[in-house]
Every structure is written in structure tokens, then in C-alpha cells.
Amino acid sequence: MKERAKKYDTITDYLRDNGGSQVTLTFTQFDELLFPHSGLPKTARNETDWWANDYRHPEKGAYGWLNAGYEVVQVNLQKEYVVFNQLVKSNWFSHSFK
Image (tube, rainbow, N blue to C red; front, top):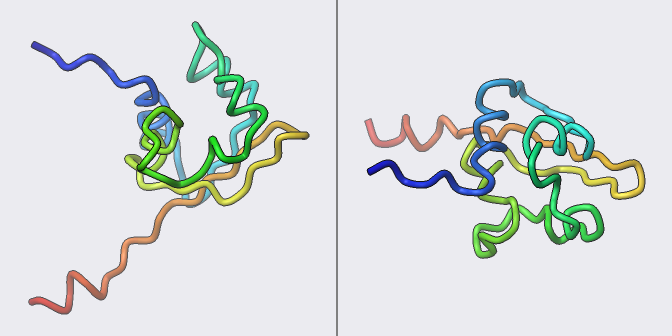
């Protein structure tokens, strides 16, 4: 049985498929591309806390971008956009145990 898709998997998929080192998305793009049926949650439009890079609150969107290897680096609620940066994977760890 296929596991039901998590609410914010669309963010993960979008960033994995379309992301470079930095991705900027407007709230309109979230509504049209990622949440065409429900729209971006109201709390995401009104509270910068919703955009925190924090796994402890699965009801917020962090799983979506963290699972894709991105973090939020800027949120502008007035101009309605979010900037994601790709997390840099350290080469130190992989080389230090060879």
C-alpha cells in the first residue's frame, strides 16, 4: 500500500526538480504551483514563524524544504515571497573517515 503523500511533499518535489543554489518563490507561485486546491496556509502568509527551519513542527512547512536539502533564508510577508538556499553538504565529514 502506497503511503499517503504528506501535505508539503509538493514543496520537496518542486525544489528537488527545479532548484538551484537559491530559489525564490512568491506566495502566488505557492498557490498556483504547489497548493492549487488549498492555497498557501493563512498562517504562512501572516507569521514568519511558519517558515522556521524547524523539524519539531510538522504542521508547518519545514519538512518540505528541509527534506529537499534547502533552508529558508529570507521571508518577506509584505511583498509575499520566500528565498530558499540549498544546504551545503560538508565534504569534511565524508573525507575524514576514509
